[in-house]
Length: 163
Image 1 (tube, rainbow, N blue to C red):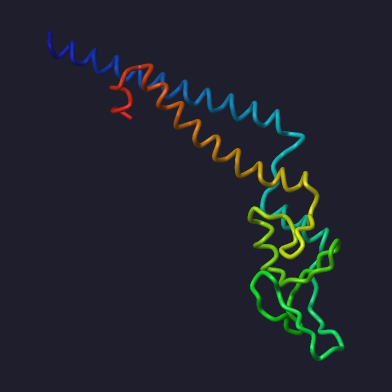
Image 2: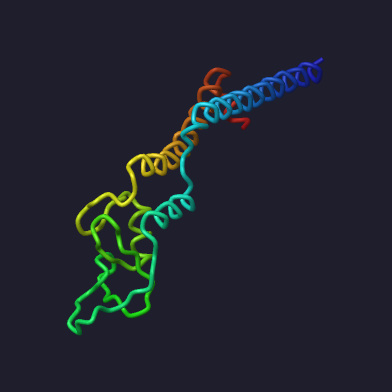
């Protein structure tokens, strides 16, 4: 009789675990579908697309030294002199010139402005959509953990120990 009771106890626990995992998957699926529907017209921009948009607005070129021998042109990001033939990006709005890789790294961080004069390099809506991608990812990761804790509290602490 004890073996039957122990079997039924384990069966009950496994059934609770199964339905909890099933419920979690259903909630994640619903959240994903709802998020896709809500953000389909205003999707976040991937880092690759963000760099393509920067390239469209401010195309890269090869650096050519001006006729003046005393031209002290340097990249304000890495503080190195600009050498003849290096790939540079000249910003259209303000005219400042930087190494392409230095500026792209700068723009992918928190700053979407010229490192010298803080003029916007790309329109604000593009920056907002690019930053949204990072904030949504971390928001979903945190909320999934919270959901697991919530369900474990709902079913008692034994469920969390079994997972």
